[in-house]
Amino acid sequence: MNTAVNVNVVHESEAQRQHARVRIPAKLRYRDSNNEPHEVKVDDLSAGGLSFHAPKPLPANEVIRGRLQFVVDNLGLSMDVDILVRTSNTQTGRVGAEFQNLEPRDIATLRHIITTHLSGELISVGDVLSTLQRDNFTKARKQRDSGSGLSAFGRLRAVTVTAGVFAVGLLAFGFVAKSLYGLYFVSHAEAGVVAVPTTNVTMPRDGSVQSLVENGASVAKGAPLATFNTSMLDMLKGHLDDAQLEPAKVEELFGKQLSGTLTSPCDCVVSRQYVDDGQYASKGQPVFALVPRTTIPTVQARFSYRQFDEVKPGTRVNFQVAGEDSVRTGHIVGSESLDTDNLASDIRVQIKPDESLPSELAGRPVSVNSDRGPSLDWLIDKAVARGL
Image (tube, rainbow, N blue to C red; front, side, top):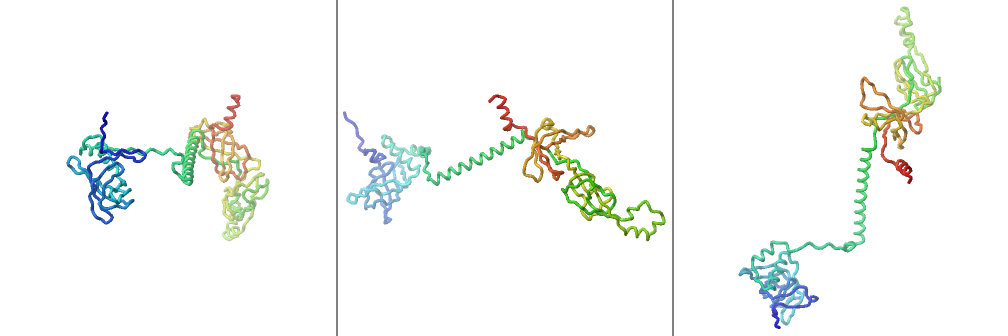
């Protein structure tokens, strides 16, 4: 049995060479270290390198830039290459070199020429152009090692960045969830105020006022609140006859001043002073606002009429008084009736706090909301009802 052997192919062990070497008619033009041009015949060629006989010895590990030339369909095909001298025999002049930094198009052309020659087919220009037009390479596979080649600092940084992104995403999710909860389960009042029944102390005569107490002070019934000064002419106005209305007499009465005292009508707390000390006040003008000490302040709030079913009497609410950091609780005890002649678009409710409010908070604005969503107590009640 005769087996045809292609003598143009040099067979070697895979452990010794990665590419098959073939003898293809080709030439190599290059310049040596002295910049002298040389043209040599390529002895054998592979996808990884070539060998040739140099007219002058070439030092090992030297990179040489040259041009590899082929003849295809009587047309010249040239390829610029960088070769690294691996072996150089000074006696025979044979040089073994390895290709360096080949571009993908050059690799595809070189492989096509070698494969076509090994299969015994003729190399044509059309096949070479067709090879250059298509994508002959695939993307590198992803490495599956656990560390991905990262150092300890790189892994720590990657974990930190991942944790930061996760924390930001968690915060964003919490913000969206809270906003949706507030939109669907929380009813907010349009306005609110701490309300208490007040008693106003007014000026009995025209004159100036001088306070004797401070805001927030407790006063007993009949205790002095302030002194006032008024002219004698104002006191006697309407009681003078024609003889007493002479210019000299009027001037004399106008220059005389009378003093009086404003007293408290109840056991109260001074909530507000309307007229500053030394200022003039007309007759009947409020000077002090007093709050009875036995009065328990409440909260009055205004809700939209669309929230009619959400602010019924007995509904639990949360509220915060302006100037305080803590949130207080209470429940709705009633709502004000609307004027049938001029229907309003809101509902006014009265809230009784669970804890008594200080009287000095009277008149302060309040933020009120009613949370009707699921809570921990609600979950416990459901669990107890189901016998869990």
